[in-house]
Length: 299
Image 1 (cartoon, rainbow, N blue to C red):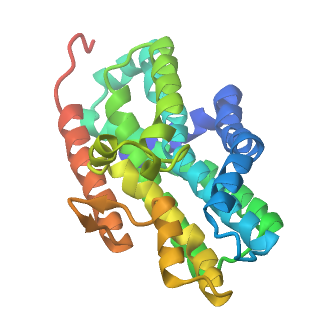
Image 2 (cartoon, rainbow, N blue to C red):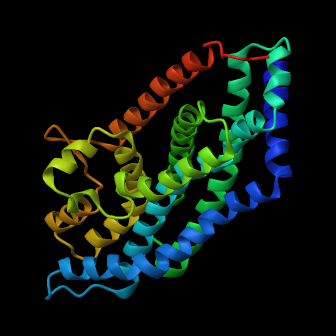
């Protein structure tokens, strides 16, 4: 256990020592919130307003709060996963600069080395994404605040689960990589594509029926939906309090992917959590099994 803690501390120190890696990880959520607010806010707002009946008078604060909450949930869904790929560079750097050769001849079991990478990535990614949550909450506060203390705590729990999912996913993907160029290429692909397949950039309800069915099998769909449910819960309650019909609120929630459907069954937030934890467990077992396989040319 002491060895594992020492490896975690060593990897975290390397992360903070590499100013480029640290800066890129910290600046990513800030860039995303600016881009989302600049390019997606008006799209979401127009889409939301066009779906409202003409006779219904909705306050600007409620509209802005709905849009801001949707944007914040989308940003966190993407950031929690993509940041882990950036933070996990330490694993690749050790191979590239030859540090792994020292570990390979040391009396340390190979899975312990990779668990050190895993837990250090979790801790560093949590630091970055908690900062992202603070930024998102500040943005929501300026636009329209309908969150309660319980909602914020649930959002923190969502971030922990999504960071665990992103870390184990990035650890498996990064495992065979040997150069920083390969890692940069993978990071670029993930950053560009993950937002689409998790329903962050565009609600899955806008996709074709076939694509919706395919995405219903992806854990990322339910991770994003969890965040949207907890970020928008207060908004939906305010809609009901201001006279929105129950059917209208349900329709809005459906359009924002808050009620994902799997095999004609509406998935609850509890079931979403179970799906995410199950995915973390299965991928975690796979990661430990892969890391236990002896590597060629260890010395």
